[in-house]
Amino acid sequence: PLSRQYPTGRDHNRFNILKGDWYADVFFDKTLSVDMHTCCLIIYNSEFMFTKPLVTKSQVPLGAEIFSRRVGMPERLTSDNAPEFCQRKCSWLKWFQRNGNGIDLRYTPPG
Picture 1 (cartoon, rainbow, N blue to C red):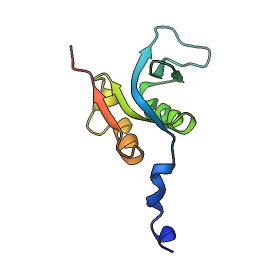
Picture 2: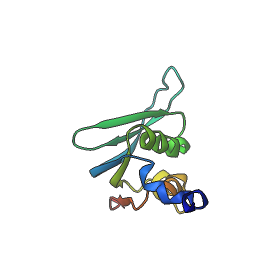
Picture 3: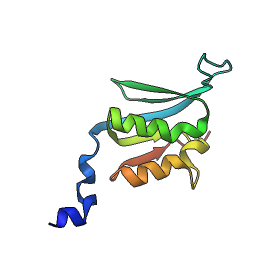
Picture 4: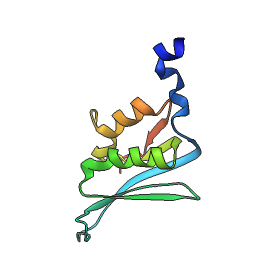
C-alpha cells in the first residue's frame, strides 16, 4: 500500500495539537544548580507552564522536543528575539520546521 511507501502522510498525528497562544523564554540564573544547570526553558500559556532545566542554552531545542513529546505541539508559539530562538540556522527553528506541521512561530519586537 501507499502508506508504506510514504510514511510522512501521518505526521500530523505524531503530536497532540495545543490550541491557543503559547509563549517561550529562557531563564538564566547566576548560581549553578546541584545538577550544574545554568538556565531553564519555560513554555507556558494562561493555564499551564512547562520548565526544563538546561546545562547550556544550546540545549533549548532538546527542551522543545521533550515538551512536544510529553505535552504536545502548540498552534502558535511566541518567543523573544534571543539568538537561540531566531538565528538563521538555529536548531530551535529546524526542530519546528521539521516537526511543527504549520506551527505559527512569532517573535516579539526588539526593544
